[in-house]
Length: 88
Image (cartoon, rainbow, N blue to C red; front, side, top):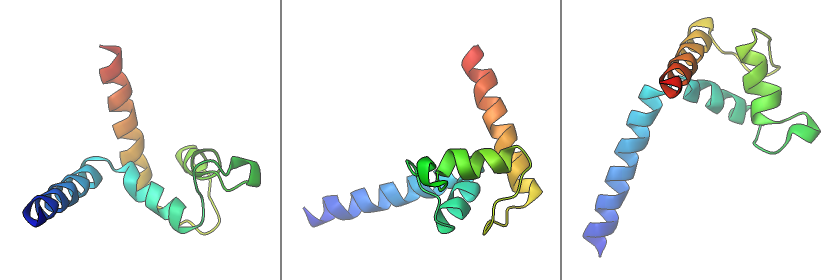
């Protein structure tokens, strides 16, 4: 049982590391989370997507967030790639 639990932990850790490397939006999401923006908090102006990620993606600034233009552009590119792939 311990071997199974250890194996599960290792696999999940490795997959989360590779997910973060493949998805540049993860940096932005972590920055937003670190500044107190969370899913479902849009009514209190602390919504993860509406009040943080969407503002950054539109070129705006969010108090408490320092995101590089390279990270924002990489996220935009990845989202556009995903959208184009979904249309096929």
